Length: 209
Image (cartoon, rainbow, N blue to C red; front, top):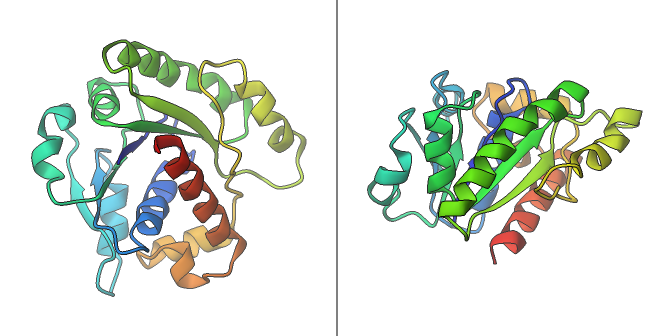
């Protein structure tokens, strides 16, 4: 499976979700490659902070040729996760064309919901050439017990792609894990954060089944 995480707006927690989702996919022994396609290199920074043996492979590839070169880069891996660029560019288009499924992380705010429009347009354009392409929103960095947190799914329903049932709540443990290059389940496998990541992974696997 090849999954790309894309949103043109920064601050939606795209890299945090990418590294935790990739690590979750590796828990059953699968070989997982995380491609950092963001020129800022946040996933590479996360990997560099780790002292333990890595669970996943992380490579930087911020070039608009991912869809052409992925067969070679991803050879031997069971899953590839692409941490996409923060803007709608040729690089984002390449990541979409490389993917089996596109996850669009959206933080519950009006600005994030409006900003999703450009990414959705790219996905719709790409689906003309790649009919098997799947895409879904995932609510990320949700602030619990707020009105906008409850209303975000209804607002996203205006777009042409569905929204995952699983949601990620903003929690301190995500930052704590990132600082040491680890996934949240390595900090506390029974935490709510770990359960939320597992729920996203499970729903993603159902989507591509």
